[in-house]
Image 1: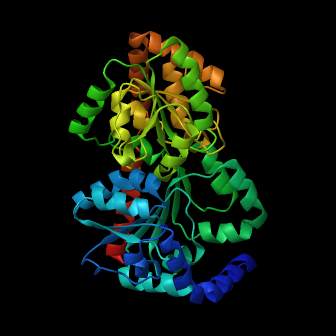
Image 2: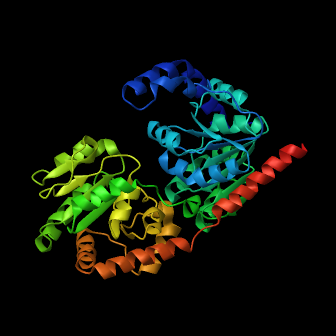
Image 3: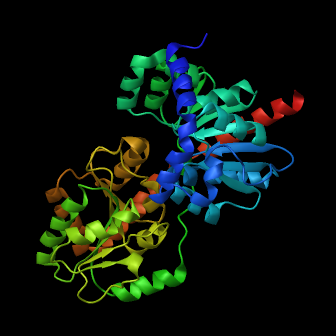
Length: 423
């Protein structure tokens, strides 16, 4: 007998199903759905299922999909077809660019019984991997009921989420029990999943620790370096509302000692570019999305584009990493660290706590709590390029010490597929 929470969820999602086409159309008008592919969200596949073994990998958005790319590449190299699903327009665009031949992308169906049934009947995956913690009960339980071998990979859960689910342990326990294995990022996360009823929890590390360096366009990097010239640069990447308001006064304070300082802001969500430009007020700001370039009097360059972090991490020896001055949990510090770009970040780094700890331990510095902390650390690094370079090299050593999750996850998938073959 299913717990009451699961029964209530299924009943509610069944009642809401007739309204979903209207909801998707409304979201499409706001740019939150791809209107040309809206049928995929209702479980209607836009392409045929390939013949042979198929591994289905689901990631909520950009970060999860990018973390899964090394898995995709290794599976395709073994002549295993891969279906990648995600729920956001930007992640779909990113996967269209980055997925190797042999892998396809579809939008994940809305979590109604009908949409998930149509999706699963068409794709018939041999194995399903859910990245991080994007848990959709109808989809997960439906796949399990059809005999799909399931794994929760790169699994993470914050303390806050754990405490919230603690009040619905039977419900979350039922969902987690559909996974044959849960591959947690660290011991602390593993304890949380075990406490909520996941039956087989193993610690394998983070997939992000095995990801390849971010790509970049060499010509665009040359253009940026030419535009910047000898100017000192403060880079703030993956910023959220509340953090730009901290970085801009940092820019003003540093300009006292470095009058030609250029601050580059890369917002986590590119659509915030015009908003950040307004925040700049009297500071001369340029928007990359509009084709505006860095001029001699440009004070703040807002890099409000998608998929170009690899450029900016290669441009400078250190960066402030956002999502950490506010309780968002921080973004992947391994991305800049692998490119020998030193990391400074605030105290809210729980999304990648192990990676931040390894990088900060190797660097010896990096944790900043206030604008004064950022000013002090950035000022010292700007004054001493050799020290800034050494910081980047230390960050790279910290990142290199982590790894192995991809290999361990692939071993699990091979076991799933071998089991299907024997059956």
